[in-house]
Length: 199
Length: 283
Image (cartoon, rainbow over all chains, first blue to last red; front, side, top):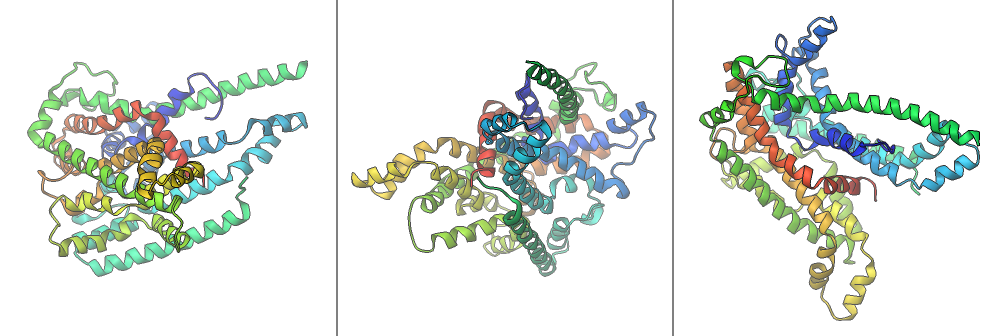
């Protein structure tokens, strides 16, 4: 994405489109795409001679939701990395080329170390977002009784609190979630101290 | 002389591969949108046909939408709540950011660290205590819990604006101080005008989050179709229409719901991108 190719801005726009779209609207289309007998995805698979898959059945629902989540978040990650890449001075690459470094070496010795802040930030954000995942799960996998075929923590908190009115239990889950997220964050910051390069 | 030529040919090949991969990815990214548009103009009988250009093209779905949902009302609710949230965030985050970036006071670092910690707590964790507070205040079932919290500031907005304020040279504030300007004047006449791009980015983000939010309206206004937002309306509609087999109407609703943000995005694409980059790279 950082390469100078013709029409690159059009590509960037396309990749960024899902980021501005509401998860609700996007999930409605994905529901059509994932349809078992009528869906677009199974139709395309069928063209390649593959068997139809039940995308929103319990066994596949997690994968399906993850695919939509990635689709929705890829644009934001792209921007973070793009900004990181563009902040690397061109001189570094030129100097390395003069010193006889190849493409491979330049990538590992210049690009990767200098982009570690972006990698760190993106990992942090993605983790927090993943723990908060709710909208796609609600829209794609909800069943009767406030149940879901992909029961993530947040969904369970919502269900306990607002479906069964068990506020105490839901709060306890929320506290556990906070502790888990904090432990993960502490681990990330420990990694940051060791590996992330700031100029 | 042979070396630059070698690099050049290899780059063309690489460019070709890059084009191919990018195009493939772009198709996957955009196809759901094309499918949404296509389906919303199809006849209900054609809803599962696998063509991108509807034949015949019909506008009936958009008309039918109005008979199922109080659509203008839902749009207005979403719009109103989003605008109120933007006002609240701009007002409080800019003041907080100014204090953290410019004003020197005791405990500044500690307070800022505490604020950053709240950034890492998933929003759903505070959902229940907030709900109980609003319930005790008798405000559940009104729109107030959906915009009032925006007036309590926010970690992200404060962080974003602080980062931007820090890039403004200190000399400006000091020169103004020497001339006898108060902190309020410095804030209002120097920092706010210079921070217009960051303020615009924060407005766009806040509007987007508020407009797309599903969880909070679902908690505070689950069934009242006259007070709730477009997202809840569509989710409600989903249950009704999928069983009725009317994906075409559903898609036209989804399309209308994303149009306002798409328009903002096309006109202010640079601000979106710069805002995200600003929050991610400079520290």
